Image 1 (tube, rainbow, N blue to C red):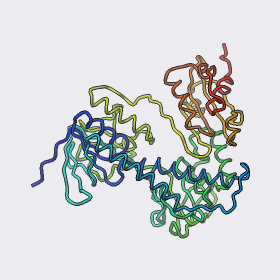
Image 2 (image 1 turned 180 degrees about the vertical axis):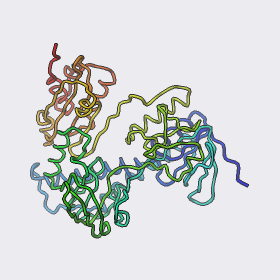
Image 3 (image 1 turned 60 degrees about the vertical axis):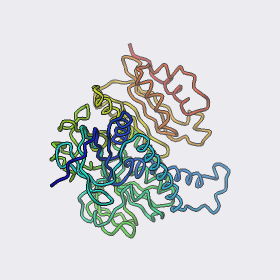
Image 4 (image 1 turned 120 degrees about the horizontal axis):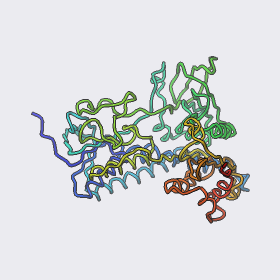
Length: 466
């Protein structure tokens, strides 16, 4: 006879960004809330993704200063990278983040259960506890917050080659001799540059014609130039057909590039070619929760699933794969649980790729505007014109903005340069407030700072044609 389920106001499967905040928020209101987490307390961001990768990237940035040290009048004699110490710095940060999360669970009153959960019926989850035994939970509301994982494609020899994903790459205690990276998107580009700066040979293999191929041509051209200047090999228009060897020992990629067969050899292989939602094998069908063709939980604009009282948030629900979007998913469900009608329709999606220089964008790119037939006025300046960039010797890149042809509304903003992830914030706020670009053009901004570059940028906007 099955044990009756433990009844909670809120049951959350997965402790990722949106799920944990929902549990904390509801518990602080006096609701009973429990979070079921298989392994990573707080989700992927603080453990194996955002925070660890930026930690490693910063170490690589410091390493790059050593290689450039003569430029700053500093000797670089006897420079050596100790990857075990790089890894340990990252691990120390992660341990601190985990403690922050444990403290938040304790302070809020939300319960954290470590184990593997799966639905066994509507709004009912059975958990195989990590320390043995099982528990069954039923929630008045249930939130699915189970994230996504690196996609390992079906390809001869790939799985057998034991490739690295970002998880293993961020925990290496040695410098790869020659790292082959399949995928020229966010993860592939960030880790390619970091590993190159630590001393690896690196080759990026991308099936499309350009790196970061969904972005504007000027962005991808400059990224490719920057990477080549750092000695990173790039093979675009290249599809892998077969993999030989094992990552960490010897790897050979058989591929076709523009119809010609080529072979690439290295010591390590990293897969960075997409994400797969973690929705398989957790009994969604028993809960009446449908999924899309891509495997995401099917949700509406309120983040409700096809099952009453069940919600899905973050990567697994098909939201853009950013922690800050998952946090907004939390706010959406929180308000709806309180009787509101908050939706995800039309929300802004800012992003930053933490290459060096950084690449960040908010709103429309030229590619998107042209595809949608939206007219715009273009302003663009090189980072070299920003005096702060000169003082720190970080002059690569540019800023550009798209302005409406009929008004002075900002349609989109792109930054490829130092502190790009910071400089998009004031532009985004102006866009949220519906302010004309002239407000930023005429603002008094501190000298010398990177945001000061917004003044010459918006001063370069062409006049409206009458």
